[in-house]
Image 1: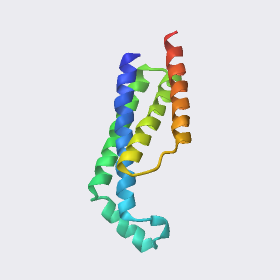
Image 2: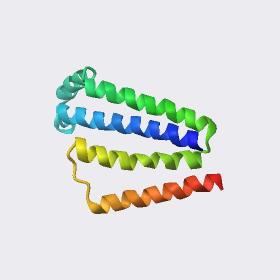
Image 3: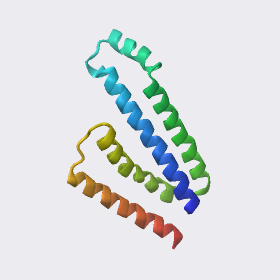
Length: 126
């Protein structure tokens, strides 16, 4: 179980950093929902050379392959809830790197999710 937790922590961190970089990169590119088709094509061309988007995609690929490794030895009913650990990492990174406001109610929800994850993880060793 310790191996699973370590690999999942690495995977969740890679996935969260990937999501953070994609969010930051796309905010810099602009809101594609308000662009013309030509504007979207232009933005797509810029996206493939944007370092944040490239590194973010690579980090999400790392998450994917680590996730495959975990699934090769762990029950899905244990492994999948461990992905909820990303709520903690996302909240901290969004607050400190993206300047997002994380309300006390959101922190409370994150704590409740983490308690649930601990209960599920503990049940696999019982």
